[in-house]
Length: 495
Image 1 (cartoon, helix red, strand yellow):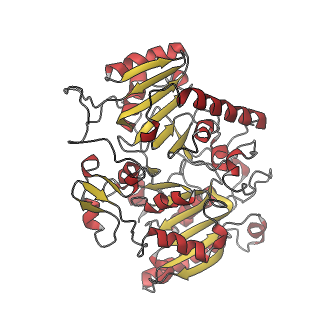
Image 2 (tube, helix red, strand yellow):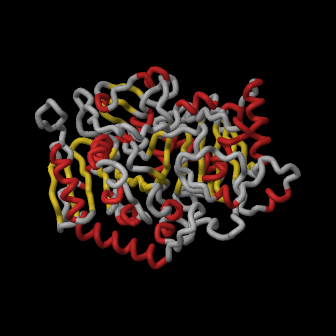
Image 3 (cartoon, rainbow, N blue to C red):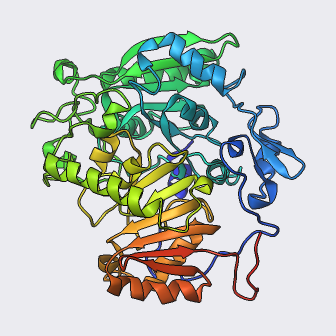
């Protein structure tokens, strides 16, 4: 798709006036279908967008069946279903070792995110993204199903991830013009793909011989060669659907030996640029920075969760002593076990989508890793940059500014968790704006947990009670708030 088309769908979040309105509930909204059944079916009235069903009716993405949307696990490139597609990738690339060697995946243009949904069976956590487009609400479908996903597009801005984050990046007919603007979209994938990581491309230029497909294929071949990606395998499945898998180099030797320095190598000053609202690079990041270290492949999952970590961020000079990371892990493990799971009036069996709004080193997510849920770890842009450590641990997350809206649809998370962020945040934006965003993201009947000083808690408590939340202060350091089904002009009701 054209750059102009993609730029139109990029994040352009207004800062003034910030939203203070409440999103209405869809008519006949009800509590979501519980996981794991939700992976295969969701309530139609919760996401009443049938347009995608009609558009993709021959591709087995999604069907409407009575009061439900049903997801059979098909897709444009998944003719035999996504499970067979995942097995096929493993057959042609045994080194991928789903859930052991490969833990974190980015799925570009994910549709309804069935690829990421079925990889969960392999202990793989996938960050799926797609734009809001003419098909409506693909990401809302994914999140309603209980699959990690958020709204994004590759156009002119960097994605909100640190360098060298993902083990694998996947694109199945994701409709991104990879070699546009001198190859900037593919250079962005190179930036966030871990050295030694794989890029899996399943698209018509890989296996069709139409003139346009041939031109696209030749352009991608030239571009991948110029950035030193090695073609590992190119193959077709039994339906003649083609897949090519590239690998990013683990050393800088190929870059140095190139006859043409095009695209040019980025400088160290380029590397220091934080990716929030920054334009795509036109230069190529070396696999190993001149400062060395930090890019070796993590140990296998699940040992990776408690691995020793690189202490210096690629995007920051801040150093994090290993003792501090270990202490944080032990702190959250004890707190969650003793307080969160025992003293909070939270029905944890109904919690699937969780967001940690100030994730730190990912200790909260690590402490609940054995439960049937997933955590979106958010590192605020005005807090220390710890997101590279979160990815190294085999968790997923994004950068964000909580004085703006998060890239998700309304009613997409079961539990929002905010620890010691609200005080500094209210120095930049109003507490009512923050409460409105929390209310937008949170599903009715679900929970917001605030850990902070008692003074901060007492500021947020009346705001949430004015929205008819049921609140409880626990141990003078936690505010537990339960969202109801109330909207202005209505009476409290249950569904």
